[in-house]
Length: 254
View 1 (cartoon, rainbow, N blue to C red):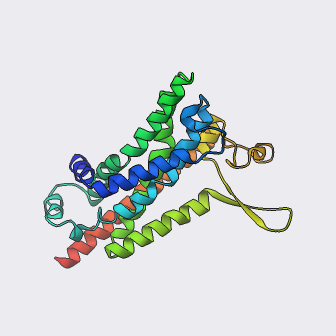
View 2 (view 1 turned 135 degrees about the vertical axis):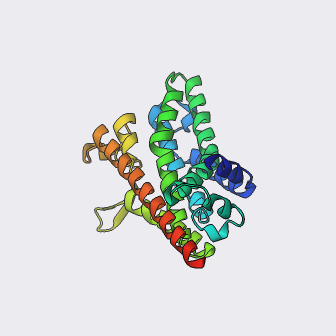
View 3 (view 1 turned 120 degrees about the vertical axis):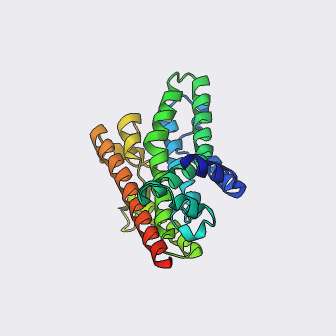
């Protein structure tokens, strides 16, 4: 089932274009003098991974609203509904297959940057890129896709897309953008580094404030693993809820 949805998602050219454009935009955002593929600095590669975890998921939040809404999948839903699997497994296969296709541009961009780092002397760039893909990029993409599927399970498609995008932006404001007071009495918004980047790649706690390392403790490896497990648990809970709601709505219609 996941393979089928991978092929279905791969045929949606508009989503590919948007995902690829957002992935390219992620490369251009930096707090260092050079871009991540112009240096051998693993911290710069980690920054690119975090940008890939922030921007492309906007497209996933808008694109995956019909993954749990069986009524929106004409023909396919009837075949899938006859399979002897739980509703959670069905939605999980849809999300995994579609996300695997839509995340390819982000994976390609990250590997391209890793190749540039290898040319500049970072011999471990490829394994580091794979670690960042698994530890930062894909968990965020999974959260966005799960939010989209959950919203689509009980809202009309147009409203579900808006709700999922707003929810993803809300997640960013709660977990990434950190307001801190300034000397003049106002607030300045900083960008918090991903815990995995802090623990394993030496990123400063606040990406746009290198001096924050002296005042804010960086995440430990244990903390980063616990937070990563929490992300996955939230995604699983959203997928399970989406499957349950979609199955109940389908029973009511029948």
